[in-house]
Image 1: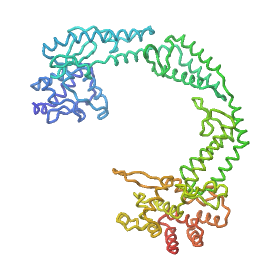
Image 2: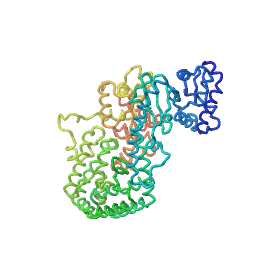
Image 3: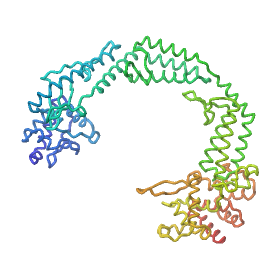
Image 4: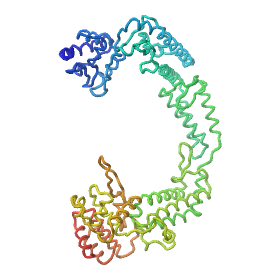
Length: 608
């Protein structure tokens, strides 16, 4: 049988396509070429299993001719429609579902059919009557009534007859189907007992949803024809005009959203019947009558616009007065602290974020800038204000300044220049004796880690970085060529590998070094954030405005950086000017094939 089906594959495909055409489904040209009968007798569509050979045997087809007749005349409407949808889409666009014995019309034993009919008739009648009552309720306000060609409407009006009952049978389950409306119930093939949880059972909830959808679309068309969406859009423009340069109660902003969402929902046809009324965009319509709805929305809009509001100009004046009074002084202290930080320090995420929050708030204060959201919330910078008075503004500004100070204090080991910070600020920022986490780090170690990662070595984690700096002869270091890097052995004998790992981990926690995970095993890899990488060479750049250039040596080093005069930087480093060495190290990391790496190596050899 299997071998015969494989040999007559073209006839099998032809029988299936003929069955589709007999149901009024036009087959696209070239559809036959998308089918294939395998050596096992399985019918494939787009190389996906459509019909297994043993399905035909389950249905009692013992000859090839019986299989052909089954495909031509017994395929259910639902299965035929699904196959047609696959054929109408491009190959691979829609994957076919495997057809089972329950997708073919078959006749069960006579005794089983007699047991099924009374139960089927009773449940069909109950389903139809409840659906008819629901249809009457949802279409009560719609003169046109429900459409005649809808499946749920047909089920609501259907009255079952024995001659309309068809079956699909696979030996274990028997599906009873009403040919007039498609109502389906599943029964046990052995004893004829109804199976309530079977997925093939017709769902009352799905039929009600279909009726609700049909009624909602009909009501949407009726309201759109009456011009309600245009009227709502006009009312929304009226509310927006009243909101200009004023702050209103949240109720006004919520009503504006209702007007916009209801107008949009009607135009999209998204009205639905829920419970005992019409709902669109979570708003319950008080009626389905267009005239009443126009009057309702006009009256409600008038009530909302009569609510109290506050002019924005008065609030802007409060901001400006506070700025001129005490706000400017607090901001000047923050700017003085920020200007004393090195570029690397400024690049730290926590420091940068806290400073930016304060800067935006200070700018909004000085300009009297207020941003009002669609929910009626008022923002000054990134801060949401519920009260506009000097005490509230002072409390917010002090909180932002304290957060900035705290971020600097927690990260001051990564680049705060003690010589440039006024004594009163430095004393406030320095950790108290014995304070945990406040210990200072060796600036040389921090910069060397940055130089090493700036060279972008592949797959280097914290332990590998520490091994390179400590001059380890481990196999993973030598095999990957890390012992040839300029940073190799930089702190050999000065720090243990465990101490260097702790430094690197602290830099990761501060955001000075970033981490990611690669490969199937999630290997941890470190890399340099873009802001920190830029800061390595911009630490002396007057163009970036990161430091005020006053010292003659700083000016000389800045010119050397701009001209890439690495020899001059090396000479200044030999004279003990540390920033020149830091800039030379950054240049060596960014341009490893240039002159800078060689000069840096000679300089460090002389130091040792």
